Length: 196
Image 1 (cartoon, helix red, strand yellow):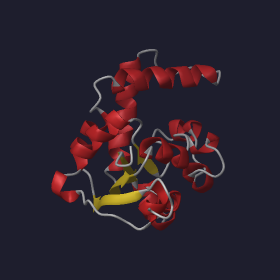
Image 2 (cartoon, one colour; image 1 turned 180 degrees about the horizontal axis):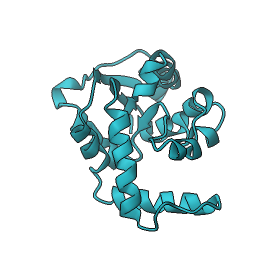
Image 3 (cartoon, rainbow, N blue to C red; image 1 turned 45 degrees about the vertical axis):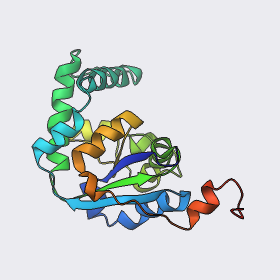
């Protein structure tokens, strides 16, 4: 568990708003360790592959989106989950390839769930205060739908350990991941603080 890894990507809006340091600080302060990082401008092909690594992503995302519309009393643009996801994916490819992103691997106990908790829900408008998205973004699904664009929510974070493993393999070569120790690991993980 101590070596669990997750992928975090600071999206183009996070880079443009100079929030990299603030976002990284949140993960460091909780006790996670960055073991890989690189800044790139992804291609639309890389983005499409990233979001479709899980063969169920298109169906599940479409169904969740339709449910989200209905839960708010709104009419979804389509009842076909795959049609909805085609729009979402087109917008994601435009958004995520519009400029540089900072791809990172964070390591530590429960890293996937810890990062998801720190990042907050995917819609900043309804994300809790104290989360990265809740504190730094005002965007909503309603506004992004009105503008026919992807929601601007600063960060991508893997949703599960399995997803993290697939995403890490997609963005990083094994030799780009650095194995090292930081002093705080003794305090966080050794059975006794004294290390005896």
